[in-house]
Length: 103
Image 1: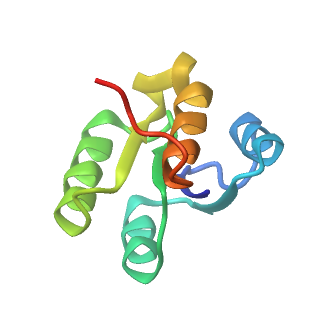
Image 2 (image 1 turned 30 degrees about the vertical axis):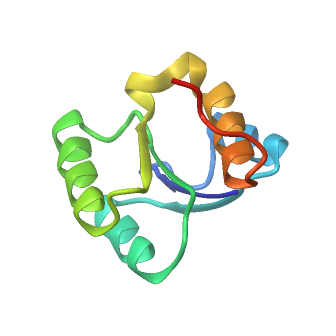
């Protein structure tokens, strides 16, 4: 699964270690504006926004992403937290076409 991670800290820290353990292909950028350019240039399964990004900036970024690609899943880590790993596993399963989400 290709994940775009927006983090001012760059490609260091505990989230990057988690991504590596889970086997995700992660592209890390420091600024939301860089992430928007990356979204235009490539395919991603999900976008994760680090807790260090201010909420107002994150919400503005999310709205811009959804204008470009409404189907792209965007998670703000300051909101998501504990269920992130489980949700990422579900997304990977859905992406592979081996399961469908239950309502």
